[in-house]
Length: 179
Image 1 (cartoon, rainbow, N blue to C red):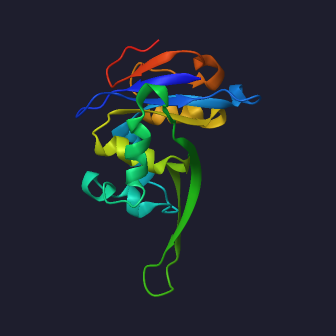
Image 2 (cartoon, helix red, strand yellow):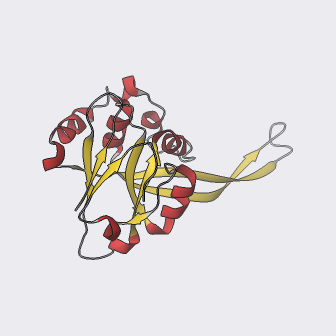
């Protein structure tokens, strides 16, 4: 297990973890994302998955019905760290159609969408954001980890595989340098 000590601006650090499994650890990436850039990517989801949460703020996030579970989960500290959020990073072309007048003058536009979506860990993430966390470790497939890193990583950090980080305590804050 690798444990991340995550710095918060309004309280003591909290602890998160990622565990090695019997297979596929080199295909699972860990990226330390800048919370603001990450939130922008989440809000950019063209499919609007969990949009009401993504568009929230600390006041609305604290009202989420599952928020209390994150409070409890983070309360255990180092002895029982919270798992990293599992996310997907996507870059894809999106077709949109507009009309100038009624159904005449159809125009098609293709734009490149870059966004994140959650597989697991929304409540943990909004708990961190509500405590003004600036840097969040996330797990994602290695197939997209380098692109996520390019778009949202904390400066001076690198992409790790789950196998790379096993057995250590890794400090996570917004100030480089990281190895």
